[in-house]
Length: 288
Image 1 (spheres, helix red, strand yellow):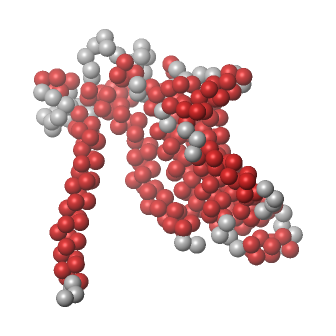
Image 2: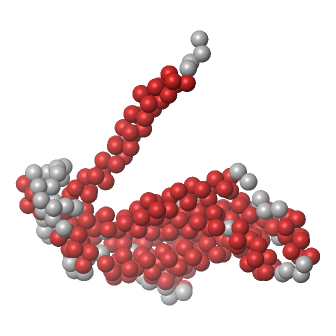
Image 3: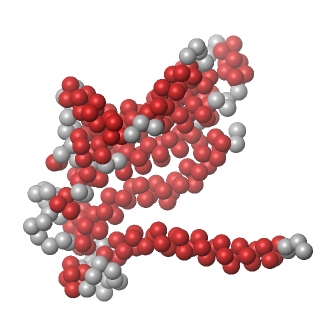
């Protein structure tokens, strides 16, 4: 006997949705604990535990985490480190995306002998573990006098991001009809004219994908930040390590929780407001 649509929907609501809600609650539980602790006082946490609902909301934790908490002897909160991350992530995202767009345009629409091999070499960086790059980057930054600088981290993320952005853009541009490019060349358009007037207007879906991908990865990156920077030049992800390094005083779990949430805020906002555009961009490239 065939299953009716009504029974099928009942099975969906009765089994699949509860399972999905359960998984969502399981993965969100750590974040809920951090949010609640960011609103609890030091005394309340130490007298009970880190698990609990705040008896009174302590917004002071957020202001202290932003501009007053001492981290590795520097009592400025996470504000300067957030600025370091912004100064690092924004230009690295823009430059790597532009380079990747031009690379993808060349490798997909201006095909030449060896283009496939060059594309394979560029995208090889996608699969190369970050740990293998530490020694070469240490030598490079030393020779360029960029050790322990935000500019050095920008260079690392620009070069490292080219593999991803080239991969995304090349796979998107390869679906652009070659006849469109030939017609533009017959009309006298050159390399950059075609890119600016034809390719860029067709590119918003994939450019949104690459910008969101790059910014999120660069902001959340930890290994290069902790290895190639120290002190006041560290990005926020590396600076948060100082929260666990202070053993001279009791742990301020409320302030530390607020600091973690502030550090995660940019990527959370991008996910909340830009997540649907990210999925649309991926889908647009997949179904062409």
